[in-house]
Amino acid sequence: MELDALLTQSRARLGPFSTVHFFAEVASTNDVAAALPEGAVVLADHQTAGRGRRGHSWFSPPGSGLYASVVLAPGRARHDPTRATILLTLAAGVALAEGLEAASGLLADLKWPNDLYVSRRKLAGILAETSGDLVILGFGINTSAVSYPAELRDHITSIESELGRSVDRYRVMVETLATLATRYHDLISGRFDAILDAWRRRAPGAVGTRVARTINGVVETGVTAGIDDNGALLVRVGDRIERIVSGELEWL
Ligand code: BTN
Image 1 (cartoon, rainbow, N blue to C red):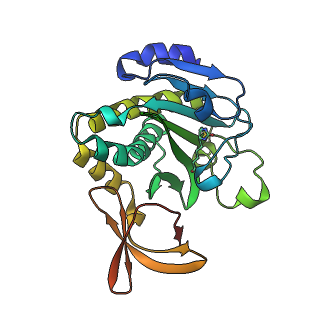
Image 2: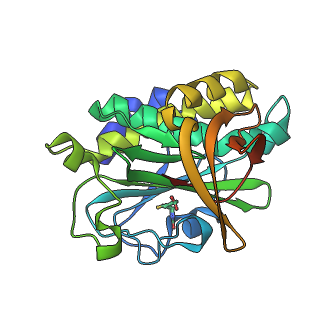
C-alpha cells in the first residue's frame, strides 16, 4: 500500500509521529531531521552517506531498506529525564523489534545496546545523536536482500531473506512508528520497568553468552550477566562483574 494511505489509516496510533517527510535520496536522514521539531519523521529511499555507530558507515542502497530518523525530546520526561534519556535507545530497540513482529511476524533478538539480529546476522541498527535538547534517533532496517559488499555479506540479513517472501516495507515503517510512539510514551511517563522488562525478554544473549571487547588494543572476554536498571550491560570477567555503558561487543 502507498505510504500516505498507511499513515492516514494508522494516524490514531502514531502519537507524535504522524508527519513523515519522504525523500528519494539524502546524504543521511539524521542530518535532515536535525533541523526539524520533536515528532518529525524523515524517511529516505536511499542514503548516500548513511552513518552507523562508532564511525561506521551504514550501507543504504535504494529500494531495499528503511532509512529513517525521528526527532525526540526525552529531556521533557515527567519523571527522571536523565534516566529517560539514558534508556531511550533501549526503548527504541524494543520498539523496532515489536514493529517488525507486528508487521511481518519475524522475531528478532536484541543485542546490547540496541541492534536487531536474526540468527546472529544483523537486521537493523540504531544511531542516536544529540542536537541541543533534542535527540535524533536514526534507524536502518534491511528489508530486502541486495548484493552486499563482501565485508558485510556474512554478517547481515534482511526481513525478506529471513521470511522467504516479500514484505511491504512501508507497513514495517508504519508499525515501527506506532510501537515507537507507545514506547516513547512509556519513557516520557516514567514507565521504565516496562521498557527494561520488554528489552530483557527480547535479548536472550544478554545473559550467559560469551562476549569479547577490545579496550586499548587488548581483547577482554567475559560472560553476559544481564542489564542493570540504567541499561548498562553487566559482564562477568573472571570473578568480578564489569558494568559496560558504551562500546562494541562481539558475540563468541
Ligand atoms: C548502527 O547499527 O551502527 C546504527 C545504524 C543506523 C543507520 C540509520 S539509517 C537512518 C539513519 N541515518 C543515518 O545516517 N544513520 C541512521
